Image 1: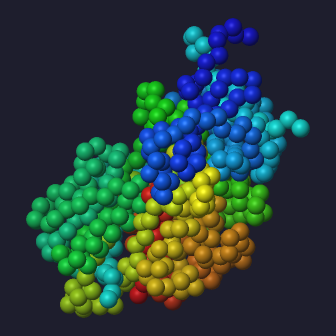
Image 2: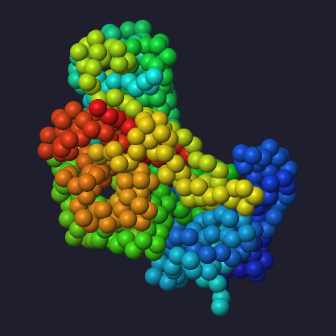
Image 3: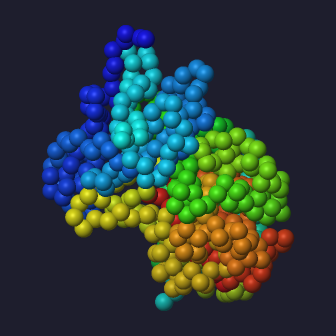
Length: 144
Length: 395
């Protein structure tokens, strides 16, 4: 195993603890959530707020839909050699009333996924550099 | 008070991977449309171009580029960019000019030359750009279409065979279209044997990117009558509405949907909202439609569009397909041009090519692809970031 430090692939988009959360913002006026973070203007057409609080989003939700990537994506994706296909899930968060995309944890295929399946957020490596391992959020079936 | 304009001419450069400058395709399409209309180039008062963003500065100012290529003659110009809806916005600009009484006859034209392979974002480390970010995380264009397709399977019971049947249907009719890029009649076995790209979509479920050009000559109804073409097909509606907050379906290139958590906010489906405005504007309903040209970026997406256009109740498009009702001779033929399955995407030309096909169909000039008794046609497409369009053409 590599002893390189784990660092977020995109800084400030999720917490780094064992039960991680995505970090979004919430409009202080109307309560609309934003991920990625929006801190300048509210996109609800009935709200003119410019005040936001940073919030940790729900770390569980249900699958809205799912697929996989059978071919290596172009850059900036950093692919393993040889390329290993991975599953992707769009997960609906109940409180936030939004759907968020992410890879599914390594080793799972589309055959093990279903619309409506409960999922939770975890962190896994996205790719490795000379200095560190870049981790990102992925979805995995919720432990029963 | 009519807000209709007449379509006097339609023209296209065949779709393919020709590798020429996009201007050449646009000029060929424009000249065919002018000849079809019987309108001399010198008489055109407004040139409305669909921009291409992949062909350098001339592509950004496409209206002027085409006007220069055809020979400067003093017409006013306009250029529109709206991803896949660019052609419809260029058409809308021409319609506005005509209805405002500022011009009688206009050329609308779009053309593109496309690179090979996956469309990829600009380089660097730019997580604030959603397009860069999603590629970094491993989410490509087919991901989105596959998510929609899988949802159809899990919610409505659509099958891989249904998706393949869309390809088989479109390739059969596309084989009869001399302007189509792919002219081979594919079978369900061919589709099943093609490589899986983004489960459940295989290579042959997903459209390619192509070179191509399309053009229309449009005019005021009075101008058409003076030419003895008072019975030319008319543009009865152009819808280019944006989504309504909260947009509840994850759309390329975003990593998340809007949040519908605020009081009084409901999630909406964008594609379904596009034709509603078109139907309202034309004063007709889905029951009046003879045929539809929809954006089959994937085979499964054609089924979504059929429901979004209200040509079938939600979840029942596959039943329509299985009954043969979306083929020529069926109740509501869809993509009788062969669709993107046979053309591939040439972004600024695509929305115009849909209107070209409707024009030929409504004139009864579609040859082996003719839909008998075609009176009213509707188009639908959608590009990035809330850009989409739906155009209604009627006799």
